[in-house]
Length: 313
Image 1 (cartoon, one colour):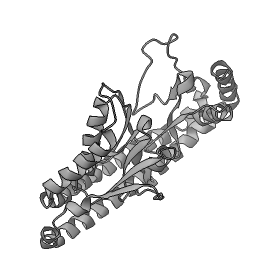
Image 2 (cartoon, one colour):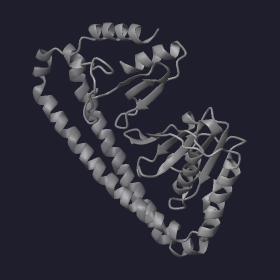
Image 3 (spheres, rainbow, N blue to C red):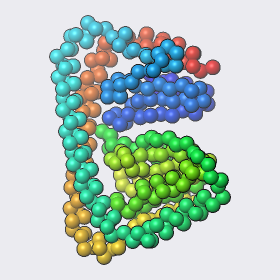
Image 4 (cartoon, rainbow, N blue to C red):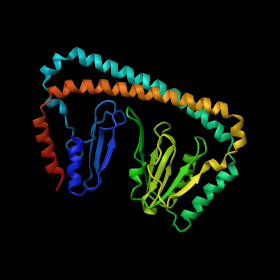
């Protein structure tokens, strides 16, 4: 439903935002058409939401009115069972994800403790001084989103897509714990003081940290380039900052065995995460078929065309 509305908006040359679902990276959770101040989003579990002023500045589109309940009742037992299996698979996936995060944070401490902080802060200071020296100080707005996700199809990132129209890209490299997110935060804190709008792009494993930030008025993006969210291409004019250069390699060599063990454990946990997410997705696809059989798609198509006529001039 949302994909077809988005396609119609694209046909009429509107810029659109596609907000993808992390539990099914081929499905949408939302579509935003900024120029029209219109947004559609999935309001069902687990992201339940209702408009604050329905009928005035928001509406509910209830797909349930197009179900044939008699068809659904035939599959009541199967639907209940599949919902139970889906819930179990997600619990298993998130248990392993929690374990993976713990191991990941442990691994970061080796690089953090081995860092030459004076060298690190000099890199941060130089970058800020180079980019901000001509700007006038004022207060700036910000927006926070995820540009990458842990999905049943593996890690997915849209950092490349979101930065494709940005001419100046600063690419940050370095192992976990070398301060990539901290550098982005320091730079953006300064940019906010100069009144620039900032799009913060958060990390799915550590939501408090950043995978990147985009400052359109500066025509600038700061992007983390490291597994599992490597950039597809490095452009000729990209500026690369390797924070691995601030690390004491002798310290790392001393604990290399422990670091390698942590890396292997993390990779093993993440394989299990992706396995259970994929399994939950397969059960969900099976569940959807019962609802597909019960839906009147002709009426849904008519509703969609009516909405398109209302929102697209």
